[in-house]
Length: 322
Image 1: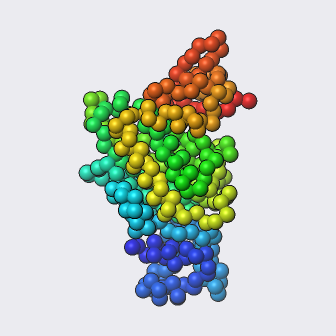
Image 2: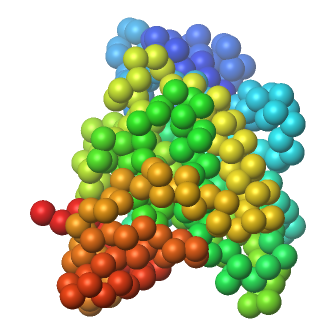
């Protein structure tokens, strides 16, 4: 365990801890403590320093733990290899660099220096307070056989949230999870493979647990975090374990059935079903009424004159029309 990570574990209770006491408990010098504190602050950790009292975190947290997550997965007989990192560029890229990437490899990070969202956007997250994870899976089929996979993953995320106690979230096409009309989580797929297969999928998930004001100010769309509405502190290790469990289950089922097994459940949770919407695809600006999704996960929209068109993921954005 790095000095940074060990230091965070000591500060996780939100109380003040003096530099000398931290150094003694970690078995390092006061200078090493100061260096680790400075490194954490530069990475985005909200650490307060008060003369005569020491250091404390602005928001208490429990560090992500491979042991705790692994225990939950073992109870459910889920075969997954989980790695927790203090900081990566992005969890997807961290997995993609692995020389032998197999199904069920999971990367979780406390912070990302280059997290990605859809359409080239960055993913904003307060370090050490959110869920930033990726999972890999190998399919025998080519990319064409994976249509609808990101939608199926959205269903898996909802199942995990419901088991965690969050039962009022819904889905926005193609790969967002919303709560109270605001974005709670987003999914991103990196796909490698030949047309005839096999294919390697790395599925990335960012889920908002707590966002500090200075990070929240950088987000250009309505957002929500679990910490806002849950009275008890969020157990990120349990939440991560549930997400891994349900995503793992989803991948296995998708291998056998494709998207069709998830289609009805996705439609049930679709927050824009039957609503008038605006879609922007490239230079095209389309207004119409949502008419569900097709067997490949494409969004069907009834536009002026009654024409029914189907849109697929990519540079298509969806906003409720006013």
